[in-house]
Amino acid sequence: KIGPLENRIVIPKIGKNVPIVGVPTDALQKGDWTRLENDIQTALKDGVVHYPGTAQPGQIGNVFITGHSSYYLWDPGKYKDVFVRLHDMDVGDEFTVFWNQNTYHYRIRERKVVAPEETSVLSQPQHERIATLMTCTPIGTAKNRLVLVADQI
Image (cartoon, rainbow, N blue to C red):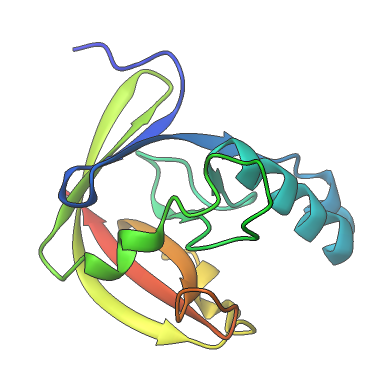
């Protein structure tokens, strides 16, 4: 079965089918956190972002995907609230990632709220294939992060 030509995430429960956008890894490799953040914010205008340096779907590790729950009303981007309904997702809910024309299915196993500086959510397990979806919470703020961890099934 052939997937779409572009990388996408489909989350039936919240009615989302959106592009997954990559960002260059050079800022990450150089430790230029300001530029990395700018690259991610720019990419978020075109969909949700696959965080550089994290696993790709199908690989062992953590496929980390982030998207806006809300953004400036005057921003013209059509993905400024793409993950606003991520708050409706529960343990046991499923989503699909289409990546390089392959299909990967995931089931949420954990839902948590963490502080923005909590970087352990990016950690890469050595023996499992997981995906993490992240957005800001409460909606309309950047106070904390809603994190959904899912197993590849």
